[in-house]
Image (cartoon, rainbow, N blue to C red):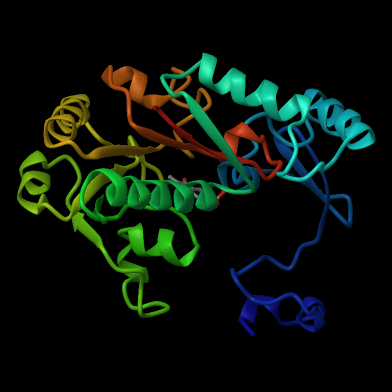
Length: 266
Ligand SMILES: *Cc1c(COP(=O)(O)O)cnc(C)c1O
């Protein structure tokens, strides 16, 4: 138990994962959260950067309640009208051709790693190393933690999933030097989010696109935090004038509802 969970909430069976204030929220509206006692709080957290329309936006409430009354889950074994519509919308508004939906950003990245490894098996003699960036954040599953470059995670949950090689951001030479015949992809956030809003420069992204194309390896962009209009264009990579081979989406795509997407060009 952590100090902040002493008192009334210490009896809760909720497992400790983060220090939480001793407050219980019961409602959210736009930028505000309300607790059990009726106190209002201006919420700068917004579900950890996922509620891009704020809490309980009427458009989201309407879409979710209508759909909940119509069809919640038909199974991945079937097509549904909404599944087809959303996939088409993403493809029409991006440089990507194919979409796979997930429940979270981490799963979308997990899928990106699997897709890259599968591609390496078929097209690059089993190459499976993925070059990722120092201080990057790609999620909390075992493989996405292994891909991440968060220093605090280095010794956690060992052994990690192997074959991630880390280099400093915005250093094209470091990527060149890390490249071998075992490399299958380079994976990065166009703007590092958790690391403290650190952009990959346009020149660097453009050089990376050139390098990966010349070397015949994949460029994977994690747009989970930067995508869905968060940086002024629908996807941040548009500002560098590049198109990735694989792009992952999350957070804003569901506006707080758990949804992610793995997208790929063919
Ligand atoms: C939040 C985030 C993830 C993980 O998304 P979850 O939906 O929390 O699993 C992955 N990559 C980036 C860049 C993120 O900001």
